[in-house]
Amino acid sequence: MNVLKNFEAVFIITLGLACGSNYLAQRGSEAPTEMSATARAASLATPDMPVVVVAAKRMSTAEKRQSLIDEQSAQMASRSTDPTI
Image (spheres, one colour):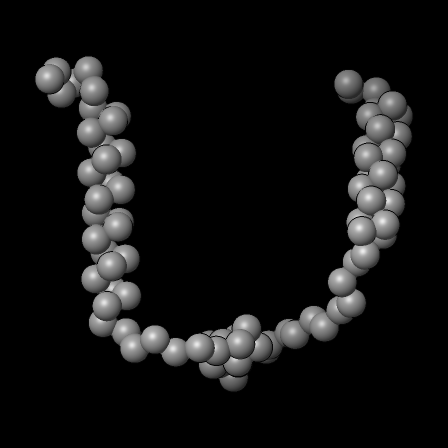
């Protein structure tokens, strides 16, 4: 195998093996605990770093569709008024 010719593939495979083994080594040393996202954010916060929790209602399918349509029309409008394009 010509290593210089296939150096990119060798590098990607080596990087994948190194990252995978590192992940497995770290995961085995920690005790599994279940925390909610809010509890995890609060545990990582320091007195200098405020925690912001956003509680919002999920958009319905119709609202998502309308939001995408509005976004696409806004992009089209900005493209049509932009003289550099």
